[in-house]
Length: 202
Length: 202
Image (tube, rainbow over all chains, first blue to last red; front, side):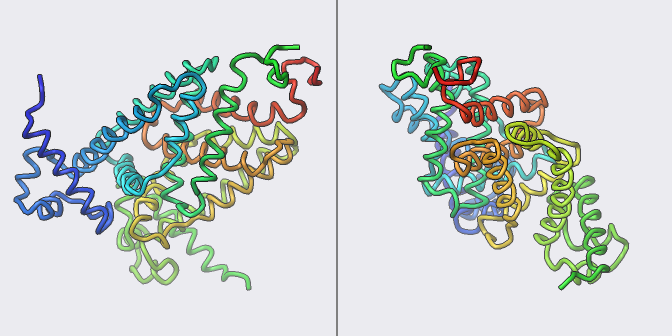
């Protein structure tokens, strides 16, 4: 059943208002009341669509993920094999200014996981792992599930590291890691004797 | 100048009380008042040693780190080369029950990074990166700094992934990742023709 267009539009506006509150006052300041004020309406205007504070945060994160999927699809369109894997990993290990804000929201969501495990949205973790597995398999990586686990930890680590030490994780540093890991994963795939320029075992 | 013994002891007690509050009510519930109550004393008894909520959290994390360093040193004592690197990475990609609580505190600390960057304690990130670099160099990894960056993201990712999806990241799964990454980093180090059983290039 298709979702009501008005609801889709309203959830999108709520996501934008949530990001605006976080950008101005920090992710901790996100509340139903603050988002309602940002929208210039009543709290019911928010809670009719997004009922809790945690749902506000995951609504904003989901809206961004939907834009990210489109961006990633555009980026890897026409690429295959190792180039697709490389491009996927490089894209994950990069940061637009808005990404940093979204990662702050993600960390805020995780900071409640210990006491409210059900409030954590794990769909992005699943979906990105599936993307890694598909890209690794397409690149001929022998154990694509293991590769997806490695890449999942690596990208999660990058997201949280850019929150912890934004100055250290320059684009150059992250790009170097992305290239090295893709080479290690996919470099061995065609033949084990990779020291041979022909790619054939001796 | 040596730190006053009473202060060291008091900070340790405050760390224990902070963990007790977090274990019972979640990391979000950590406050000067809650920790003072846990200790059965006044808030001044806490603030004389640890002045802010963020300092409470980093005090508890630091106390645990000091225990971790001892544990890791015991574990790698007598090991060298690749075995030391493997043991280090396997130790980082494992979880004791208390670790999960500490990671929740760490995520709580990071959730304030966006609005209070100075409140984030980054010493553990620096120290673990240095450990990785030393272990990688000792294992003969050609670019030990790059290896340390890879391992830093991987272990940060593991810490946050065990908060996000504790059920998915079983010891077996994490151990598989640790072995694969160490093999990829150190396996090539002695000689490029690693498909040869003799380890010598053809």
